Image (spheres, rainbow, N blue to C red):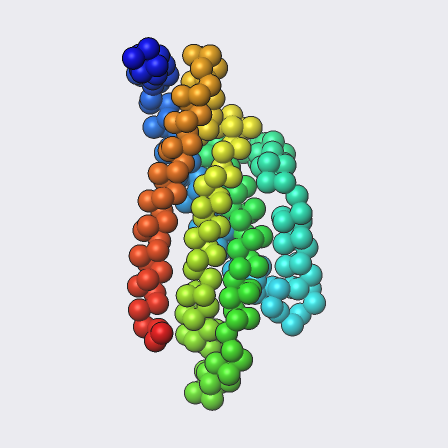
Length: 228
């Protein structure tokens, strides 16, 4: 009984007293906003960098190579701080927007390789078939190659989104209150570590679990036309 009494007291102190649970609710909104905008931006950037990497022009290939090499070779927290405190230092935008841009740029380096691998996984015969039908290179890519590649890379993109949600826990370095930072505030206010950390872990787990279920259903629909 003493154990449960202690737990209930800690729960009240961490989440109920002074409406501290609202910090976590606000943090959930921030995490989701940053992650959603970042993954969309990352896919857009990743597609163009993948095209550069697959280009026959040396300049474009060089741009793609340098971008992916720098992004994948440096810590995301360093990139975030450079973009926030240097590149956007004079820009009066909301913190979450700048953070979303930073994570989008970071994600683009990884998504580019996923898209490149997905395009290369499509048999060259598909390109030849498109050309034989009278389609040009752009039409062949848009109507034949990409629809098939999307099915192949969708699981990897889902994984990138999940990783991105967890990586946004570092936005506290620039003063943005996400789920992790909200838990840190509760911990520093109450001097209790277990309950806030457990709460943040559960929230991240539930978000990612729901995301997994939803995206697996989408993947299943994408593959309905395949014969197994």
